[in-house]
Length: 248
Image (tube, rainbow, N blue to C red; front, side, top):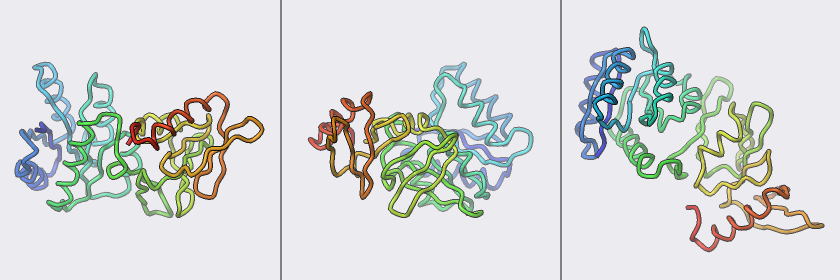
């Protein structure tokens, strides 16, 4: 059962959100805060009292302390609660997911969509550090639009300076994050570090071969080199993967 905090400076929106959360059988307790400053104060008190807080459903644009700044402060807690952004604005999705948000929910909130957010929150708490492909998505900006790329649609990720290019059947998408951060985010989800600049989705690997002593992976129609440093780990993880006793 989840214990959550809902944060919104608009009273009707906060009332509706808290009502819908209380109607969900998976939610045990819903606290509310009318702004970011009060939410931060309440969370500090909860931690001091030893109370559990599993998730925070927070608006983005609030006076004083906005949702993104509050999320950054929450990230500094010893055991931070998971974040779900609830907002009328689409343009902050990339920043929200860079803060490792579980979900980004657009207003007006539909009960079925909120129920999905609660499911994602429950899954993230039940399996920390191992998001499944149905849950995790990466937002990318495309000409003023935000497109959400499902984790398991990614064949492999390639480091390009301060960015990562996600390669999928629909092409490549550039995301501002480090490959190491993406590797941590998808730890335990079937992604293999094959090279210092490459993270590969084992589900899309069709072949492992050795050419002149160097390991190579075939992912879709692309052949990727495996560094000597990562060869043993890649081979062992692929064996576990296809035996069915490794990562999901």
